[in-house]
Length: 123
Image 1 (cartoon, rainbow, N blue to C red):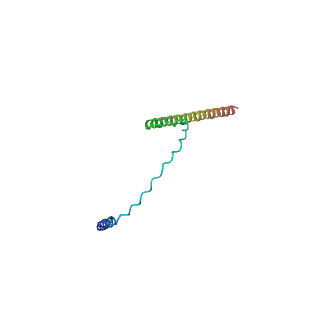
Image 2 (tube, helix red, strand yellow):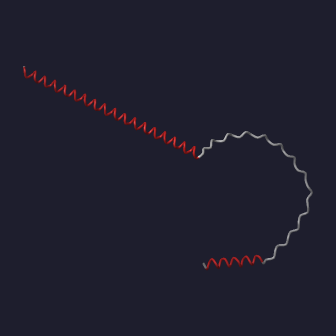
Image 3 (spheres, one colour):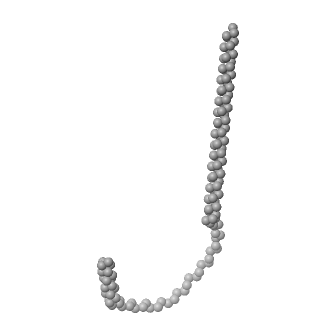
């Protein structure tokens, strides 16, 4: 606080010193010069048509566009998820069908082996 007060007081003294210095003497005015004729004006150039301004979107339009993009992205993700689920279901069905066919083939082979064994026993 003391430093601030000391700086303010020193500033006041400096302003007082400059305020008491005598003013510079004024310079004599320059003599008037004769008027010169103005240069003729150049003709104006024709206006060029302005380029169409880029479409300016308002906040509401930007928000609507962002919402539409988000909805489109969500729909695409949902479609991809449904496609993936359908592919998984198809693969599961194919695997089950292959397992069923293998089981039936194994049962048929076992039945044939049993029949062959019974036929061999009869001989």
